Image 1: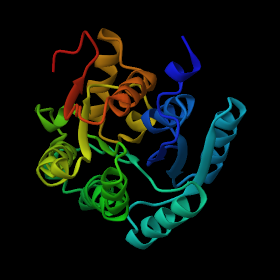
Image 2: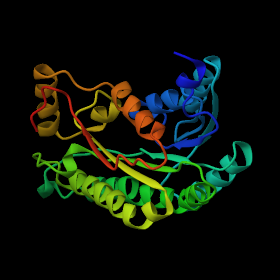
Image 3: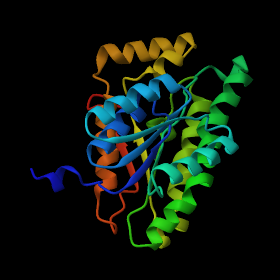
Image 4: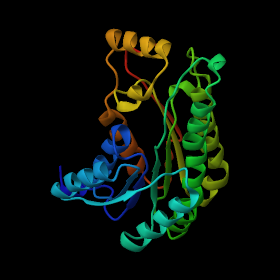
Length: 257
């Protein structure tokens, strides 16, 4: 394989939210390995710094920026820093999210708010900050990608996952719908719906029923690894400018729902 084959994203500037662990962390490494300069964002600066060191040790370019995507002013400030230090962004992986299943009758308003603020508003604030850059990149003839992490829960029913699933249905529908607005401007939109991925997301779950369901699933099927999704995100971004993989579901082979 030639160098040009392995650096298919050279010259591109990417932003990854939720990059301190799991899918975001692995995707940042995958994009950098293919030549993109990557701004890695999340709330945990120490994790981001360690990730940036690994990327740079492998010959890549990374900019670690602490960010809470639920703060629109902070997202706008990060967008300005990325523009200043790496250049115009043409690839956004909006991945930050949280999963807090619980029976609706528990009335966990705190968890409802946390999921709505991060999974919905965080995505909208990311779009607000970076879509103008994507549109400008596309207008100058380059590729431009808005890729979001949804979930199979957007399409399927799982006990005690009602609020989380509803937020992911929002992510899927919003990203799909934006294709109507951004596609004519040659900005590609992609929503990725993973099945169960082995990440720290499961460790945030406090509901005993959901914990038991996840533990049972782990005994019966091999979960996806974050790297599996990362390779898919990179593949999406590598496509020719006129090709848009708009809606992708990726599942463990043994997962039935």
